[in-house]
Image (tube, rainbow, N blue to C red):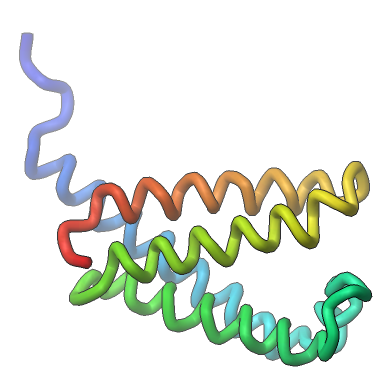
Length: 125
């Protein structure tokens, strides 16, 4: 039986998906700066200096997103850093706020899993 998707098509899908995944995080990162006043209110009170955490999250999203989209170097490492940041967001920000944070919790949990898949399928570290 013939394969439904050729190897070349599979590589193109992987490249397109990786690029889209990375660019989405660039948008998320930029939004962390554009919506700083709103996002500061989401940071749990047990985190000091909420503006710092929002800015740091934004920078990590932008750097990791650009690196993943470009796929030139350290793609696996950047995807793992992104996965680690998403895990922290899920565990320390959204999980304590359940059930009210359920949409964000599920979104970030799914993005965490996707970041792990990007890391797994990346050829460069």
